[in-house]
Length: 181
Image (cartoon, rainbow, N blue to C red; front, top):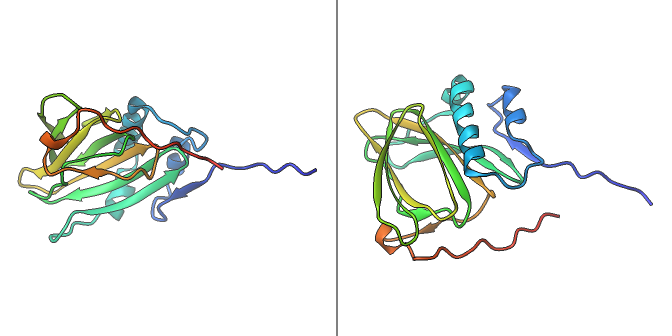
């Protein structure tokens, strides 16, 4: 009988060559907490700034994004925002998340199931981690372009869009079972 060792898979954007990123991704970690996600996006924005700026693009017709990394437990994205560009109201399908602003300003309207709609402004260097139930809409505000780094765990969970944040249900359906094989 032969024994095979299954190594966790890691995909990293080909332009990100800093050896710090693989260390930050903890490929054997299958589920990240909101705090761990916030630590990840904050560290990536502060320590890998030049690499991120080499990838970053702005598109006048639509928001731009690039996946920076993917493991079995987390996905990491870079997004750009011209003033006024925004997401539709959405949740993250039961995944926890985080984002940290690399530069510029982002406005966020958010809501937890059954709670009030709240507003918050995020400026460069600020990050936030959030649990699975949070729904939000994010907008580039101010008169300068913005960029942000986002992380989600578990990865590759489909988002659900809403007509408005008022339409977020009182209970977010649970995540489907995650099968790793």
